[in-house]
Amino acid sequence: MDERLATELLNKLRDGEISELRIKKEDFLAFRPVLIKREDFKHFRGIAQRGGDIIYQYLKEPRS
Image 1 (cartoon, one colour):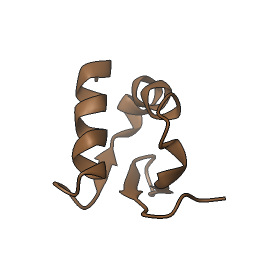
Image 2: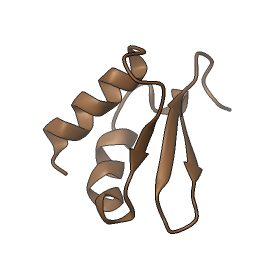
Image 3: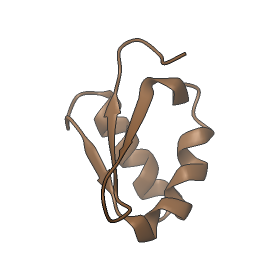
Image 4: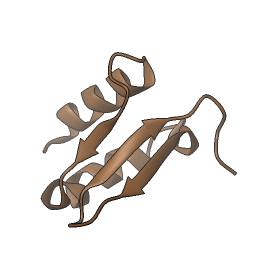
């Protein structure tokens, strides 16, 4: 996964085009730096799954 694809997927999640985003374990290390650089980082919630995948959701209110 490259930075352009990660940004595109995060924008789709933010804009409501998709309800959740599943990131595979092997893509996580490339994905995370893109996520944490965003101004709206605190609006994303990651839910770890068995096997190492993570499902991200976008929250209207930022997490604390």
